[in-house]
Image 1 (tube, rainbow, N blue to C red):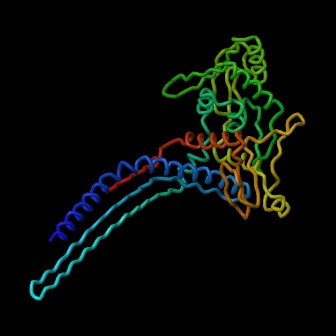
Image 2 (image 1 turned 180 degrees about the vertical axis):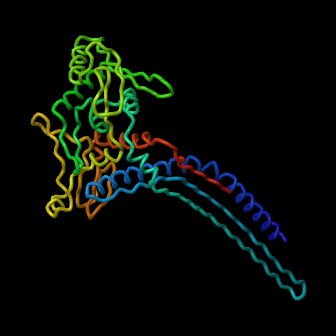
Length: 357
């Protein structure tokens, strides 16, 4: 009888432990799952972006998938069976003890392709000039923002690497950006938004009055852009050519155009170029000097050992070196812009649901 009493106490203890474990699993998984899924989604996003850039480099069609929802469900179940048979005559005893435990993890991830109207809004719509100015006001270098996201400013053209209309930048473009960057670093570029009849009009202000050197640069920028020399505020519009000397016309790119342009800088195997599988890497020069690509994407036959992001394509690995800080920053900035430029109806953000029990 002592044996059965001990067995009952053991069973009761196991049941309490099982219930306690089930009750405590929920809070324990929140921190772990949040960071694990954040890391996984971030890594897949980087690889998808690079993979589509490589595909476009080879003339293949890009395909983007959004993570619509992430559902992670845990289940713990336990069961204990006890049995006993005692016969007084003839003396015989039969005991049985059984146990069952189960742990289930059922992650469900929903991926939604970006197609149709959503593709047109996200990928093919030009980035609004107001977004360009907001990025500059937020502290991003004006030369990087304009090189990446702008076709032209007041008719002065940026380079474009797309094969259909490949072109080098106008001679004034890079010197203009250098001067604007100096003015920005001196705090000489400001911005404000005015509401007029429910339409938002962006006005950028080039002050250039804090230091004589900045004032001289400001005058040079105004002259290059054909702006009024004494005006402080200039209306910013989307377009190629300004209507007067108080207006700045910015012809912006779409995300698809940005990716096409950036993809032409990807370094590809020489054998693929010789076999006419891909065009040669675009080389931009200005004043007789080669312009460094904003993002350097390398290629190698084997998987790189120290890569920020890498993807395999056509038996070749394409990757960004983890020690190339500038390429990493601009690649991350490109993904950041991708999340900001969608216009029209917004889709739902990824949802992480973790029911436990």
